[in-house]
Length: 274
Image 1 (cartoon, rainbow, N blue to C red):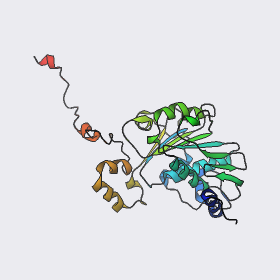
Image 2: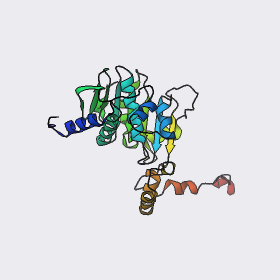
Image 3: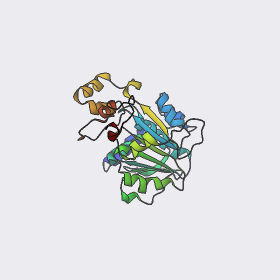
């Protein structure tokens, strides 16, 4: 192997050497297993769901990036002419997800010289591409849209730039991340969008809402979680308990406000007491 010209070439060459030669593309879960991983129950649900809209609210290091990368790589390799678009609030996160996609791509599945830091192009005319979370991505079409760290993607970008990408392809949208404040489309959809249930029609109006706290993932070290809880209760709730919180500079914690509300008393207008 010749000396790589840059870091992207080095990463590409190493990924090809480490990727399995033969992949089982019969379904995403089979691809996950043929790549040397064993999916847990939560990952199997995300891999096999028929829902057209998926929102994944999982704790840090619980496997959400890996499972979504597998879905994206499976779609690109098992269907001809697909365009899987990856967007993130921070482009480094999007590139990290793209690198995870390479783990689920066989050595012979992509043509030589067609993998870069921002894309993977397969021999079946499908590709996975990273685009910025900005107006510069306007006008693209996507067979599948993946939004990583969705809580930090601006609302106007999601509404005006990203969702139109699947308006004619009728492709799925997958949102993933850990919660931020109680605002924005990620929180709004998690809180108010209709929930999709297995057996019901897979429409864009209903979302598979997948919740996974650190307690449901035995790979996460409890000592690390406790360290964070001791330092910052707010960060612990968001990063590991998957709970949305108020703004960092908010005067009151939303949990404290909710605890002050009671339904035991009927509201009384002040003038009625006179």
